[in-house]
Image 1 (tube, helix red, strand yellow):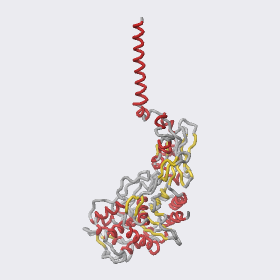
Image 2: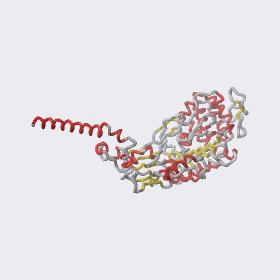
Image 3: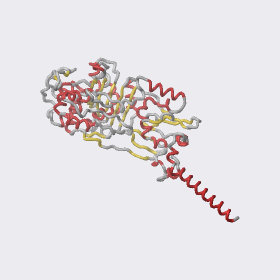
Length: 485
């Protein structure tokens, strides 16, 4: 009898060990795969079981959370959603996250280990902390000035503090209310379909995800390359550029919108925006020199993040001389995001040093304790300091005596450059209106802001656009807001 009891006990022991091993396999070895299984809703339910942390602008939250009473308890809300959508992105229970909502999701959702009171606390307890907050670098008055200036037209504005790289405004219009996508159900699905079907592409962040031919605003980059390479040693000296100018190796004549461009100096070519002079200077700098120069400004960088990814601004690395000539005036395959062109203006304003742009100042716990602090970092030395000073003078001349007069602010030193970019088949599309600029308050040691504006559907004739009629007034309002405290 005892023998049978021992056998039964041994069998039960084997079964117990098997159960323990299986439990260990499920809880330890297979935990991650089970957690990540789409059929497992526990993590999703836990994710929305507490309010999401907030995104702050100027010390005020532009996001919130509401209790829905549903299984996925808390749903994201937005204050002034269309105004801040290019900054926040959306946090949707159906469609996931974008922009800051995506890049800082671990902080906002409370899963970031840095939010825990002790190291490895979340891993040991398999819990999450209350969602932390994200404090942005955006200035509310500037964001509003840019949004209202665009007035719903297709376009974008990016504004940067030259000395630090802080992004002070990031606007894209037409915009959308990200709160329409926050929850689940037919209304969210319908909103998603409507937004994606819209020809105006309201969910496209034109400020950092759309590239445009930069047109004549790119002439600032070409001028920097020419001065640094000493192809031009005196900006006020006449060049030997003929007008009309025949593109190298072709019989195609490059036109000028402006008058008096024959043999014009670099300073005059910037002031009135001569295509011929700038195209010729690009060819004289040469392909290698131009590629080296543009990359110092950030062109061709596929890894720029703010913390969301920024689309690559393009300058071809293999071209014939006629293509290089066109690229040097912001045409051919040259494209740039508005943020990239704000970086160009910023480098000029900051004495040649280009700071890495960033949108998040710091992240904090729900109670306000700083978890991570971002700071200023040099991105590249874009040009020599002397070159930057010469370009500053030229950009001031554009505003005071040239095509950028609509950006002038009384008592303020403003530098700018207008641009018109043709596009479409045989350049049949309505030109894009560009303006890049910077502003320095009286008595200040350095410029306070650098701005880039692009308007896709500028309702003006080409001459008005070239004169800064569409984009320059928007830049002026944003700069005024920056200086207004």
